[in-house]
Length: 285
Ligand code: GDP
Ligand code: ZN
Image (cartoon, rainbow, N blue to C red; front, top):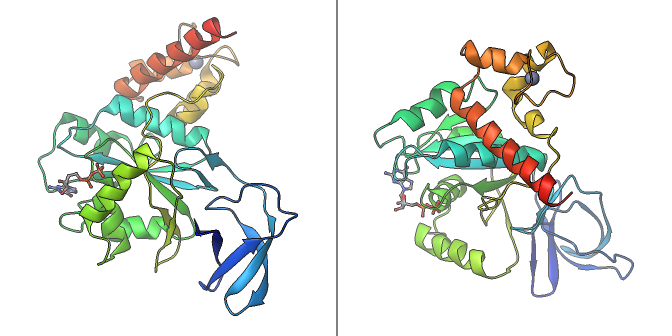
């Protein structure tokens, strides 16, 4: 289901045709954009939703189901990227079982230590980094390729270029950046229906950015390290099976850190988030 509008649900089939649908009375749950549904045809391009398939995940802001990919947009400059925010967003995505794709936008501007850390070190930490520029068009094709077969959401700090990238990817002439920015801004304040834009090259883009929140999703202390792909190579060397790679002795991850195999800022941000989780566990046991 790609959008809900005027009491109808618009459902795109595997051939790309869009059906205007109602729901059957037996469908009790709220049908969200992103839901995979079974429909019966009731007329030319008209139908009825019979069943909603189980969801891979469900986001609340924006309210959308089955998001499989997140474009984590960071500007190379203006604003200079915050690695803390980036690491939080990467953890958030993975917690929701969404594959993050780092888009380093504004490559037409000068680089700096933070942006260089992203392009040099994040690929070896296990992430895909796409250098891009909504201004010059660099990387837009690479982003489109990654979206094929996925439902993708955009996230990142304000000003990084989310609406510009969205526009560049959609290659849409009627949706000028200004118009979209206005809608994106409005989206922050009101609950509006989320729309999935089908891409000609395949896949869908959610029209409203997600995860603008800085709060970490609620998780157990042991879960966090699972969202650090680079730790997996070294945690086998930890003495304790439930090692948090925090203050324990004989920790493979901290050993790798001292040997320079793990990026210091990534580890520091890990500790920062871990302490936040521990503090929450103390406060709300
Ligand atoms: P959002 O808040 O993340 O949606 O960011 P916008 O898409 O509104 O972009 C913020 C500002 O950055 C706007 O003035 C854009 O014109 C500018 N911008 C976006 N992409 C680029 C880029 O690749 N290069 C440059 N130089 N500016 C860009
Ligand atoms: Zn450890």
